[in-house]
Image 1 (cartoon, rainbow, N blue to C red):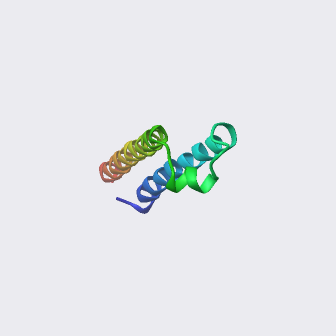
Image 2 (image 1 turned 120 degrees about the horizontal axis):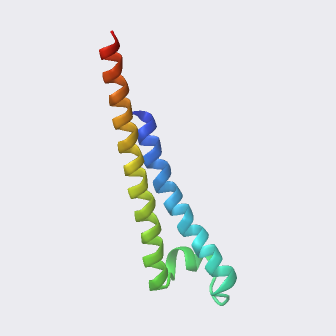
Image 3 (image 1 turned 180 degrees about the horizontal axis):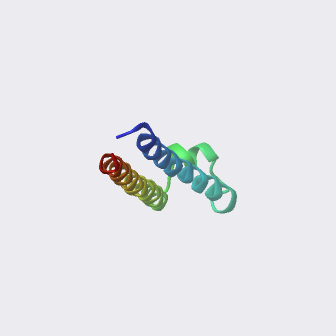
Length: 86
């Protein structure tokens, strides 16, 4: 894998984690007024939120894998065309 493909994978995981933190921030402001943000984000997470955050992380990771594979196939096709053009 090239650096760009690795970067896509890394960013997809980071965005999945950030979306989980944004979800906990929304929960803090709108649904759970009696808990602190840190408790909702890390220590006292409701079970339903764990499922949602894992789904976000899984979805972004799978998306990153698919994009990386497409980028790899494109790079290999371009290299093959360069060899044929010589």
